[in-house]
Picture 1 (cartoon, rainbow, N blue to C red):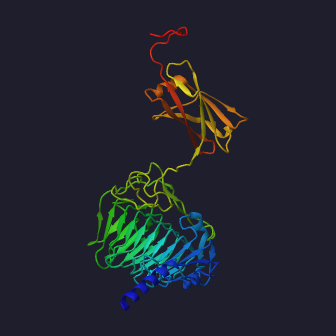
Picture 2 (picture 1 turned 135 degrees about the vertical axis):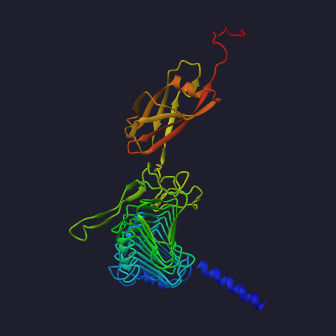
Length: 499
């Protein structure tokens, strides 16, 4: 009985702790981000208001291994992420996660700038077997000897939907340095890695046994002074590239995309459903190492909406990396070219927050091509007459379009159309009514009769169009269908029956 009582007490305590999870706001409840974290227990969270955070307590931030979330007020909103800035002022890293953090330790929705990690990790340093989740972050203008933006030392983090831009390393890995990981490896998912530079591995410098995974990443416009403009991996650092773009990277020694092997144990890179520039010319593989080309690989201009570039200037403020828009043009060969068997998680988004699979198949790269869906404004539609006679002599079907908060002059009249069964009819005349608030159009009744065909006794008709500002409107109205039987004849005198 005593044992049962102790067990029940422990369960109640756990439930109580869960129910008492606390949210600490910065700067409301604590002056610095670190101060707020120090107040937390497992299950708590820290929410950081927009603003720029500097100085002690706002750099080299540690979660102390706690299972907590540290986030901006809205990590899924680009404006909020861009406005919640950790400025390391060239002294220290943004976050140091080396107390065995797990996947329940989350950092989300920050822009980290001007980090200087010294030896490793200018923006983030993740070590000591930690496996936190870092998502929806932007890491810019950070530096270190290894891993200008992020250093992963014998750890297995998940870095998701992040943009890693314009960082530098003195030795290797302008963006990322990866050291080991054993049988597993860190996961970089839906990330843009661009504009980074280092002597070796302009984007990625990876060594020692492990299996780092890059899934649906865009790795472009990175530079190396010697080898591996995009990636330099060796000593059994067996990378997996899945659904990635490697394009427009550069290295003085000619290995613009990858340098594989050369030091230590043989290394293999598995590549599938990727778009790789210079498959036959820009990859150097040392004897004993190799690249395993799987299914679905292509080599074609990805057709970014606007590629990033390095700007020249007489001052450091004028020079530097200018981020582009790495979304895909509709004609891009990467659209619907990913793994046809890939199934996205419910609610998954690309690096820019768009629906991850917009078409039938996932796109290659971090950004999904998507057509922006505009909200349809409800319109009040009124037809006259309310009955369509299939043998009548009516020449016109009149339609009045009324839009709340809009006037007739706001409508692009050339876009107005009548829809039914996949067919459309455009009006032949329009005019404004009620002091310009409503729009009245007319359709040829003969064209309407042809579309009605064998419909039932009633029919619901749709009219739609576009406002001059670009918004779509649509409305419906229901009409009766009259089908006369037999031949028309004159009415008989009252009391006589028709035969």
